[in-house]
Image 1 (cartoon, rainbow, N blue to C red):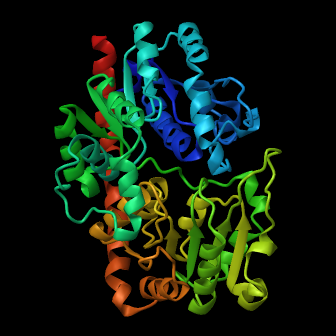
Image 2: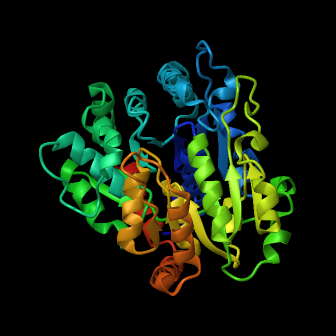
Length: 451
């Protein structure tokens, strides 16, 4: 579809307040602007700060950042109006502040008068505000469609077993299953209402090759078409923050091909001391090169409240020597995963990380923590592009088991099938191009023209 036909379509995007949400929204915005759409990306100043330097050149002409100011709440200063680095006990407060921003958001809609709103799953109130201004709204869910299907099955048919037996929670993950089955009715109803309020379609981050049956199933649950938007992976481009990455690429260039693992657990989860000790032990005894990204919660002043050297096992850095690199807080993940010397990704299996790993053909060593991550880890094994490090019945992670899985995936003959599957997935995604986005554009143009 020609870009000139879409130039009059103005879209306001409202992602949830975390990098794991705003990043796919930004990548979708880039895809839509390349087809002539004009995009307004709305979020808090603290959240927008993580992407403003990525919108340069021509992008700055078609993607405009719109600040959303949350009302003040005790213990939540403006610099913490983002999930990135937010202490977990403040997450409900942030959600409350977001829900209380309706009036400011309504004023934004009134001022911009967009043709379409694209909103996140965690903000089911947004389409109601859009309706008051006669603006159609479409939900964009950034979780995997597998998790989306599993969650809504639990909400709508809790007495029936999920029809796909490869997707489940393990016994030690029962608290996550219980969270779904016994969640606050307001939360459950809000999630369902977010889908029901979406005009005609729901957008989901993913592709049919890996999630086709789950896309079809959740479509049948709601009688509403779920449309995959594709992987939406940011291209690995240089960033000025790399100066802070301790010469990571010059170090990585010196390693052998596929000899190094990248270890990261996302921007919103902070490892327990027990897990850190076991991961450190696994990295140490495996004798595999590694890059490990370590993060800590921010204090109210925006600075890390813990020191790296106090949390790692005594003497760990000296023992691993030049075999390992530790980055604190941030890493250029897509550039690292795209490097030819990366042979595995020790990941929490957040959906963005899973798709990035698939996109670059890097096998996954799955260490899920909570929420959607266990389901994503089961999908990774179902598709064949990774192996999970299974915890014991008390949910304890074993460093020895981690080392064994890393060695299997990166070095041993028995891991060749996984390595081949990962490489095959990369080729498949590259060959697809923008098939999904073309379908999304067609759906959105039709919706706007009929509104």
